[in-house]
Image 1: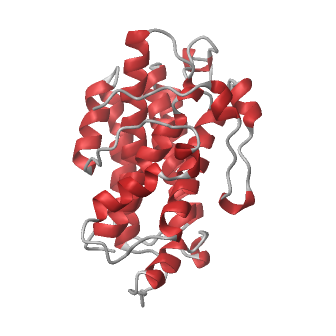
Image 2: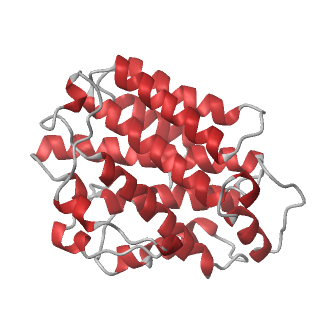
Length: 270
């Protein structure tokens, strides 16, 4: 994997988000808040590599990127992977700030292996697997059900693990899944209806409403791409010295968005 380029704080504090009319709260980047998580060392300000607020920004920027990429997408392209990579290089927060990021689109298996191999405690991989299993089961889901399950797993890991890097990776993983669910799901099940909107644009409107197998594919691709991008970047940062986490959240958002976009474009379930 190419080493992630860490853009400056000044550049990122100027970013704005057009998705849903929201703007990025630059205060979060300048003064990272430490969430009071529990009595273990995860709650220590000295231990946290990235704040919960900054993780939320990854989710927002992820959705912004998807919206920009698919608003004017060439659905007839013969090479969706190249088209998607090129489009993400033109996303506003990438282009305006000359942001460099890993431009390889990894499979779900590759991303989960990258996560597992970089965990401090490999036993924490169980939490990631639980989420994948939940999203893969055949039951119907809506945004509230997904959000509740992710919160429950976050709480379980918070109470049972003292490994900060592993916990933060899981937060990135689940937060991007949450934002992805909001982005893709139909309005009737709590989302913004973009699965249906883009299916119409690509000339393949779906007759099925509500939960679809494609949504499983897209959400697990999103979460695994974000989690892998974060934990690999955190390992690089730890090896090269202290690096403020807000300097690479754009790269994580772009990498996750690419994975999601390519899965939506290429999955047989979509």
